[in-house]
Length: 140
Ligand code: TYD
Image (cartoon, rainbow, N blue to C red; front, side, top):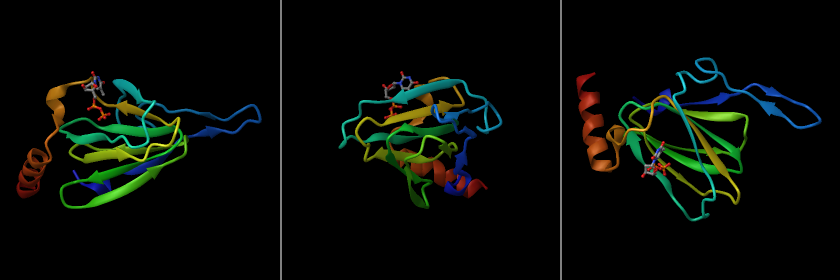
C-alpha cells in the first residue's frame, strides 16, 4: 500500500443559515464499511498521536473541530497533510505509518475505522513496519 492510495475526500455539506450539516455514508463517502468510530480530543498542543501503522485497518480521519497535521509514510515516500475543515476527510489505507501533531486548541480528531480494535493489527515499531513493507514491495 502506498501513499498515493491515501486521498482527501469531500463530504456532502448541507449549507444552512442555522448551521451546516455534513453527512457520511458507509461505502459511499468512505470506501469501506465502518465498524468502529473513535475520536481524540483534549489534546495538548505539543502532543503527538499515532506513531504506528496498521496491517489491515483502513481509516477515514476527520478534523471535526480545529486542525492538526498528519504525516503519512509508506516506507518509501512521506507526505504531510493538514486537516482543518470538518467537511473533508483523509482516507488512510493499510500499511501507512502515521504521526499526528500540531493539534490546535479544542480540536477533535474523529476516526472512522474499517475493523474493530485489535492490538495485533498494529505496527508500533517503525523498523518492524519498514521490514514488513519492504517484503510486500519485494513480492509485488
Ligand atoms: P492508539 O491507537 O495508540 O492511539 P492513537 O490514536 O494516538 O494512535 O490507542 C491508544 C490507546 O487506546 C491504546 O492503549 C489502545 C486503546 N484503544 C482502544 O482500546 N480502542 C480503540 O478503538 C483505539 C483506537 C485505541
